Image (cartoon, rainbow, N blue to C red; front, top):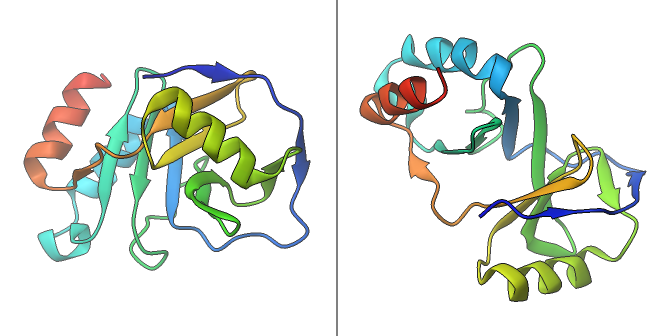
Length: 143
């Protein structure tokens, strides 16, 4: 499911600690190639989900790769099931936005991503543990 939502956004007063990253399709192949060069232990604890326009990795901040051009996300402190950019938040209360999206999609973990506008809503419940075969599949799908 990839519904969109038109919201006003504002900068966060305090940036959240990253717990995931969002890579646009044009960066996905390079990021996946970088991840494929890592050993299995480095992939442990990371999971991935993708659309035709973006790749999302979830995991502990220390495990996330730092890759030029990607942006980072984290659960909103006031709505842990709503993942947002680390430096931005919707103009409406995050808990209300999460509840409305949860009712609309039936999913509990949702990424709300502002770029490109209107915002993209992506369910994270189906994220797959990052393993070599998942990397291969994602590389083929996002080629």
